Amino acid sequence: MKLIFAQGNPEPDYKNTRHNIGIAVLNDLANKLSAKWETKSKFHAIIAETSIDGEKVLLAKPTTYYNETGSAVRAITTFYKLVPELDLLVIYDDLSLPFGTIRIRKQGSAAGNNGIKSINSQIDQNYARIKIGTSNELRQHMDDASFVLSKFSSDESKQLSEIIIPQAIDLIDKFCKNQLEITSHKTI
Image (tube, rainbow, N blue to C red; front, side):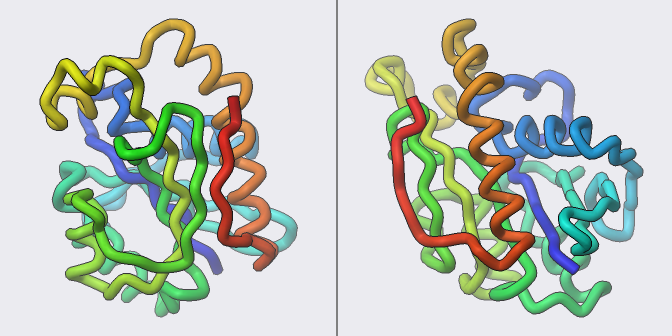
């Protein structure tokens, strides 16, 4: 079984914000697979069960806030007896990467990301990640908190739906087949 976990904030006000790019990826994947979401309070998450190429997969979106997602990851991995370094993939925004860059890592520090810091404090730092760059020229004019909670422009939203999210979904497929490679590339 694989766990695909999206960093993000739960309320509708956060929809289409840079911090919720992981949730946008999982929502599109769930729609593509006709997976149904169900709130699981014991996991502090909304879960959709599905399968990808014969592998049972849990898609998970936190019901906690972004900076407290470690409790959800720990609850799910413990309950299902998952081995994070083999079975966990976390998708999240990275404000240090230019918009449209996708970076794959198999482990690592939080590098200033409080959501990843929360997960690392709960399960260690050995798990796969898809980091999606969100930085643009606006970042120079805003503090980090305001920037990550800002909405994507209409041009960025179009690029997300047509290019970036489909590429992230392809990477999830590779992860489920144990074929995900460490890489960094610009999608647009």
